[in-house]
Length: 507
Ligand code: MN
Image (cartoon, rainbow, N blue to C red; front, side, top):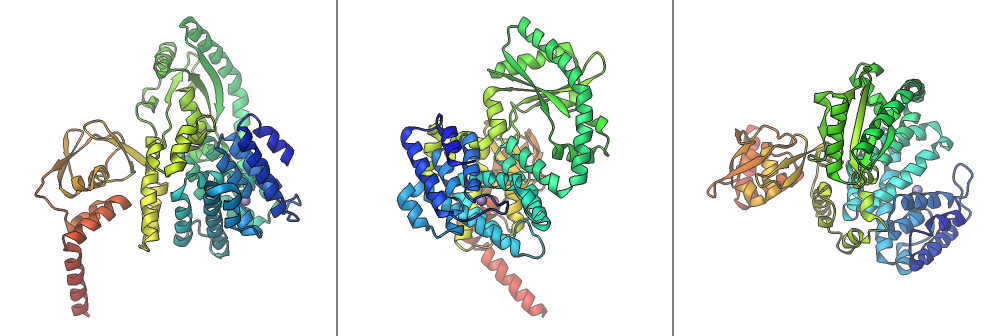
């Protein structure tokens, strides 16, 4: 990647002023990194250019692209953040500053002799950077992707570190942002370095299997395309192949037998409207026998990261098992690009609203977990202690969706308890909770909620938060609200003092 290529790729995407700014940023970064080389021997600037190019291909706004160009200047050159701000403005400087923080956190990490993917300190820095603007993590993902693509030049031990960290931190991060394609790329690249033998074996296994099934799938494809035509449905049908890493994870679940994996290759059907998705599902089920337990409606109940699609697995008359994924173009766009799609240069509204206020309410509902992340960041800034466990729960574990009786959707971590829900709705509702009804049945305080539950909080205005509730909340949000309420009512002080006295007496 060089300046000419990058400018050429950017032509159709941004307006004249933005292109000028972009060119200025390329020249600025080139000058700053002059004389520096990557381990591959290439001039260093090839790296930021590649990162910027990736960000453009994801459709990111111009500030993110420029931040991608400048992401290594503060740490590796004599450029200062004030300089960046003076030339490129506050928004770009803010992002570059965030990226520098993340990168410093990573540098500390490499000093550790025992590899830890995230120490508390690193994680704090990472969160402070990210919690303020999620675009920082998107640029970071582009940076990581290029580092993985050029990993062959690093010494073996560093290859392994980068690969492991990518799999443990950056893959899940991309997943949380709904960036399915990026997650897949990161995981496959990393897996190739972590277990090259297994990677190669699976790749061969996969291509053998695919060779056999591609022809058969082709027949089914033309069969369904004809059926769509008859019904006047406009649909695009494509094959989608499972990634090597997800194949290896799936194989571990089915004791290594590839014959038990039905979605090695799936047919993806993309349509204009949501209603078409259901019509097609019905049509497929009239043509082939569905495996009932494998029908999934992620349109009505999206995955925690916002993914939407209908999935069904059918058995054809000649006993072939085929998975279909049915979705609209919008859903497809989100499944591939996730949160990055919100910052699309063509649709600058969300992006502008977000940049102006960094107000997460302008982000899609499925991304409201970022609000919680910002709450953590605020605490860290106040110097409050936060355990790594708390952070891990909120950030990287799977999420569930539950509903209020009115039908509002709330996003919680897996394993969340009813009080977590109550506090998420409102701290007053949490504080006055007397009991719960889940799906119309009385539900104990200590029983985790499930995806899709309808949760009703039974409120008693006279009821007060109790000390024992500390063991009945799991989210950082609920814990901190509860803590505040207990403190206010003086319970915490009393109990802690009493406990301290008892402890002292025992000695
Ligand atoms: Mn970099």
